[in-house]
Image (cartoon, rainbow, N blue to C red; front, side, top):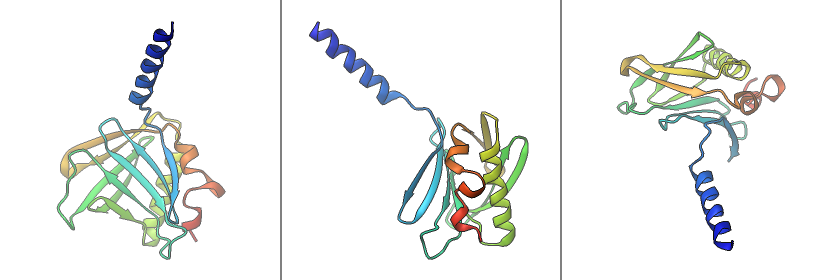
Length: 156
């Protein structure tokens, strides 16, 4: 009987180690709040707000499988949420919302992701012919809305 219990525990432990649900997560470290989603291919989107840093400029990092731009290259990324296109020019793999228009566009994207009732959204990299699909599971909680928005401490 004891052997069966040990075997059952090993099987359950192995199942937990293999489980991946690709949900949005939120974290805070060194004065920066971030919401991150990873897909099955290992690509990810990291939306951040460095509210506890000297520079409060929010932004995002986007990594895609097969997306390896040369140093200093600008990469166009089109984020499609509920059929609407949000285009951003990344410096390699990062976008910083440093201008008024950039901040407005970025806020619109974060709001759309948090409000969407769809199951997923996509990011296209036209120059590279890449399309990455990500889950929206947990996006509303990780990104927040209004007074609880992840961008609250970074937006004047």
